[in-house]
Amino acid sequence: MIKGLVFDLDGVITDTAEYHYLAWKSLAEKIGIEIDREFNEQLKGISRMESLDLILKHGNKEADFTEAEKEELATQKNEEYKEYIKEITPADLLPGIDKLLKEAKEKGLGMTLASASKNGPAIMNSLEIMDLFDGIVDPATLKAGKPDPEIFVRGAEMLGLRPDECVGFEDAEAGIEGINGAGMFSVGVGSEDAMQKADYAVTSTEELNLDTILAKASQ
Ligand code: BG6
Ligand code: MG
Image (tube, rainbow, N blue to C red; front, side, top):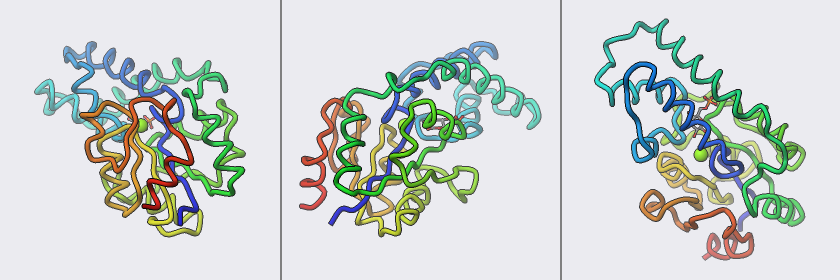
């Protein structure tokens, strides 16, 4: 029986995945690297420094920067990203998410956040949904990020549940892999191509229906 939901944040609860993309694109341009949306799929769910490494590799510049310079580049990206997220309000919840979270709460399901983002707690506060959640897994305490299942296993643990008693929500290929690896039912939001490995997938959060998801996860 499903007793808990474990959520990714960026691109599932709110549209910050787009802001991550814009901020990385602008940083990459500054150092002469071109990235597009197709390449960006690989960055979804991946930590800040790992994302930078993938971008440098993509531009054949992985040997061009010292660790300190890389830290500085990652900070610059985050500063631009923080400008985008400054104005977030509850109106920025993606369509259908408010309803989904409230229905889940009414049904007594536990909910935790499993996001790779260090900006997660601030965004959750701006969206005013923290009181619906039972906890946030701190990405700084993980041994391995997505696609490793650890963050999702920890999200279930926080609820006192086994992964197979939870449903995980993701928009990233790496995230779906992590949910599946944890032995959790995976719900994907995104293109058919990117969400191939999800147990159940929709193209927009608008299509997320709690009863449908619970029925599918219990099959
Ligand atoms: C994930 C995003 O949620 O968080 C990634 O999908 C992002 O794109 C990662 O790189 C880390 O985020 P932050 O806010 O700590 O730089
Ligand atoms: Mg995401």
